[in-house]
Length: 216
Image (tube, rainbow, N blue to C red):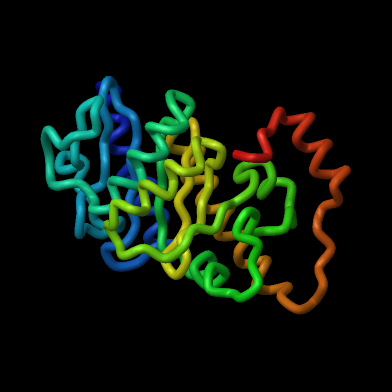
């Protein structure tokens, strides 16, 4: 089995896992991953629950479509992460996960850091999550907004839309997307209850021990 075949199967297997657990619905959500000199991307208008490995979109090194089905219309988001974060980014995952979208609509959010450091893994896998404004799905302005972060964040939350995370490889990006949904769920469960987040000392210790860039 070639590396590309393994990547294709991994994309479809992890996408289905996200779908069956309700982390994205219908034909929403998209995944991209570096593969050889180019990229594999989930096609537009297709459900995570029923992807065909042979029909994934293939993009060249310049992120232009070269084979397979037409890529997701959210490609500008993915391209912006790859182009600003460089080779350290090996995959990007965008979901419409319910609790994350719900948090994005709350009043009074800090747009520079949506979530308090409620758990160690939210610090370790996400860093600070930036809230971006609402954009029409597929709007190239989403990519411009991510580029405006100059590669400083690995996770953003699109208002009234959903999270986008970038990571070193496919599994890490999926785990980060799952972690973002979990911290969103905890945020909603503790809303108005004055929860006790990790202290600045706790966060500093995690950053030092795990060599975490808190800015993403």
